[in-house]
Amino acid sequence: MGLKKCSTGVWAIALILLVLIADQAIKVMVKTHMFLFERIEVMPWFHISFTENSGMAFGMEFVGTWILAIFRLAAIFFFCIYLRRLVQRKANKGFVFAIALIVAGAIGNLIDNCLYGLIFTESLPAYVASQPAQFVEFGHGYASFFNGRVVDMFYFPLFEWPTWMPIVGGSTFFGAIFNLADAAVTTGAIIILLFYSKLIFSNKPEAVSSDEESK
Image (tube, rainbow, N blue to C red; front, side, top):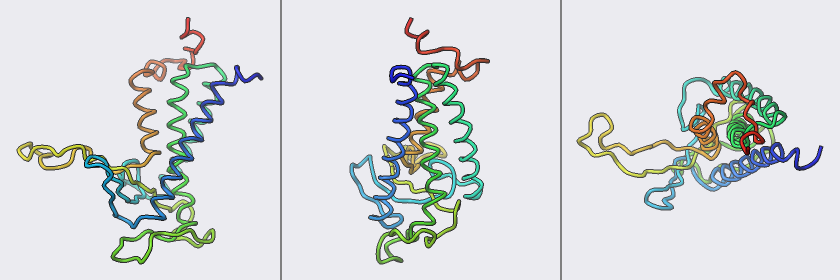
């Protein structure tokens, strides 16, 4: 199979790897160089704010870490099969790349759940710990397999709602703290909803191919 014929699949894999490498590099840097809850103001509207969570994207927590890890694993398996099918049927490239972003983000946070508790000491606030978390021998970390916490760091306090507004008054617009994996999943989902929702709800979402689109 020639490179041209495989190009969409190759680029999808490359996108997944790029997001995974960047996501993990940022998380490891933050975890090993910052104390828990430490915040660095890069710009007034952009902070690096180190938090950890055992729940869903953007710091939300609903169920146990191991349940979420299993859910992510099942979702990754489904999306990988779906992605392979799309590539084989020469589906729309934008749709393929959007699915690839979702796969990359899910894998990125699953790595935290599965491995971080095994390879890192626990991250603690500066008033409790003398140093940030460090790598340890495999299996001697702060938690067991499937019970590691997801590292979040990106915080964009763009503006505060006017105090006179009900409910949200005085609070920060989009106060969630998230990571690159969360952003990848969200970006992929938004792209699909905005541009490819018909492919999702049609009987054959793979029917619109890149070749057909170019005609």
